Image (cartoon, rainbow, N blue to C red; front, side):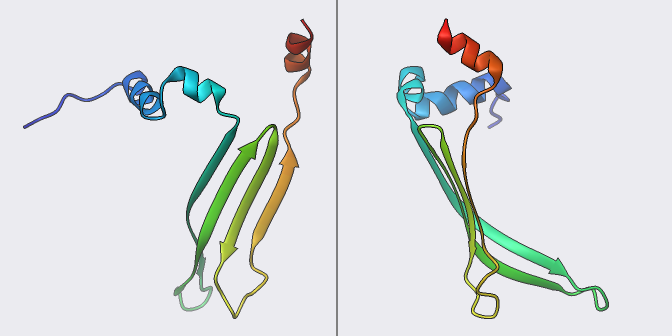
Length: 99
């Protein structure tokens, strides 16, 4: 049985509904995403691929941002990435908030 193809707007609408609707999405101030990460390095001379598995994490809360990639490797214990930042508002966003 063939299903009709969904438009991009329909896919986004279904996703928003799965999160509880537009009001729930607008009210949420925190987002967390966790997934798999893999660092792959192609060998220069023998064309082999080295792979280092890990996890990727991305979170936002009240204008703060966390991005991390953590690899589980005893051979390379410092091959991790962690970044924290404050999201800066553009001048137009600041002007809109003042009005």
